[in-house]
Length: 129
Length: 132
Image 1: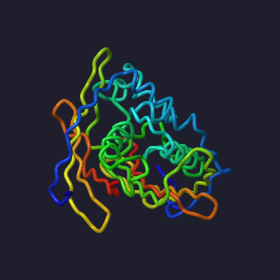
Image 2: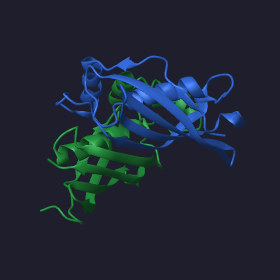
Image 3: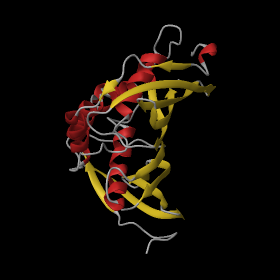
Image 4: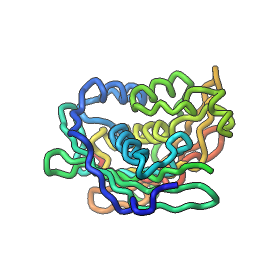
C-alpha cells in the first residue's frame, strides 16, 4: 500500500545522467534501428523507470515492485536525445488508487538538459493483487 | 498526399526469447517475467511475456520508418492491454498497422494497431510525427 501523503510529491533524481553512444546503439540494435545519431523515441524509459523504482520502493512509500506491471505509457518529446546529452530527471507521483485489490500509480518523469525540458513521460504502474 | 485515412504499410516483426533478453539488457528491465518461464508461471502468467516497452519500441520503429527518422516523433502513447506471450523456442508475431487520424499543419497523428497471435496487445496506441 502506497503511503497516502506521497501523492503529489516530486522527487529530483540523484545526479545528471550522461547518455552514451553504446547505450543508444544497444537499444537501437534490439529494434533493428541502424541510424543511432538520435535515440529511438522510447529510449529514455530506461532512465525514467529506474528513477520510478528508486522512488516508489523507498521505505516511506513502499510500493511492492516485484508484483508490478506496466499499464500504459506516453511520451512527449520536445527535443530528441542523443549521445553526450547530460539529463537530469525529476519524477512526480500524480495519482494513486486501488481497484479490485490492484494498486494503480500514475507517475510523471521530466527530463531536462540543463534548464531545457526535453522529454516528459507518463507511466501507469499496476501492482497486481 | 497524406490525409486523414491514409493507410501505412503493414509490418510483421517476430519476437523470440533472445530478443527479450537483448531488450532486458539494453533497457535495464531485468524483471524475470520476461525471461524465466518458471517465475512467470508462478505469478499467474501463461508463459514468459514480452516487455510492454519492447512492444512499444518496435511499434515506434514502425512509426519512424514511415516518418523518416528517430527524431520525427513528438508524442507517442499506448496502453498495454494484453501481453505478447513468447514460449521457448518459438517466434511469435507482432503485426502492426497504422492509419492517419489527423493532420494539423505539419503534425500527423497516427492511430496504431498492434496484434500478436491475432490478439490486440496495445490499446489507444497513437503517435504524433512530423514527416520528413
